[in-house]
Length: 167
Image (cartoon, rainbow, N blue to C red; front, side, top):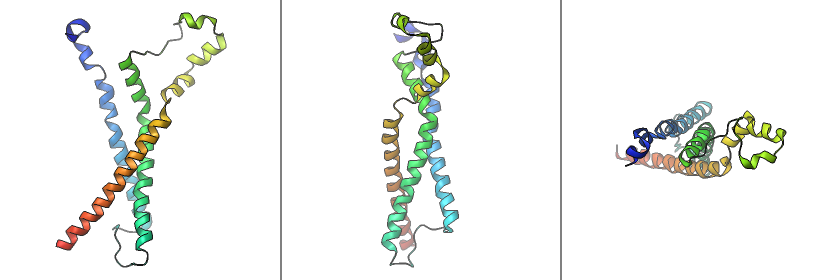
């Protein structure tokens, strides 16, 4: 029915932006692994679990938990900053909200000054509009990613120690 009324292309609306947005987790993981590798190079360690120092076990455990947390926060922050404008465009497109062009006017805009119209239509204003609502999105996604990577790293540590004990 949709293809008859609105055309077959309507069924594919938003597919391109969805494919582009699929890069967000890839960017997130790539930056996370780069940060993790960079830390290991600086630290000079190849293993995250050191059994030699029992005195520093509690502090090492805290550091091992904080490292993936901070790395995940930073990597998700960067990935979200890169892909957020695409999410906004996709949402606006699905909602049917189009960006006004310079020559288009609404009845409500007739009493606005020329200066405010120029400011509203400027590139900077449009760019800032692409990042509207970013704060709440960052809070949600960065914390989610950070918790996920802490759990992931702890599971890797547990499974690695279990496998090494059985071998």
